[in-house]
Image (tube, rainbow, N blue to C red; front, side, top):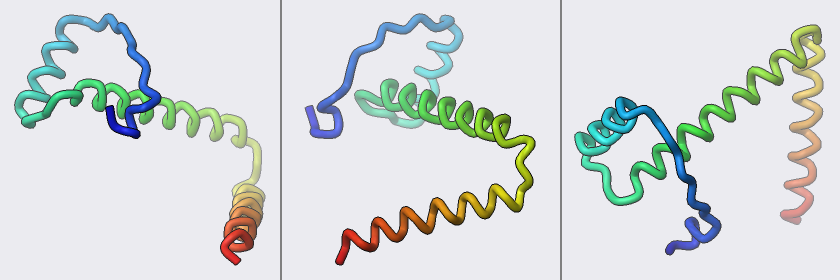
Length: 89
């Protein structure tokens, strides 16, 4: 077990047979190796969660003027940059 896999957990999933067949066919055709299905599922979950987070943020900020959002984003980035560069000194 590599250090990246150190904190893995096992899942038991039920998916339609057609999804299983399609994924296994895809992985076989791309020459995937052992563990490819787990990597594929983990990547799909990360992407879906990211998409849900973006959708939620857009909904929360739907009434905020774009200029205000830009200012707040820049302010947050400036704070993080100052913290990060202060630690390097």
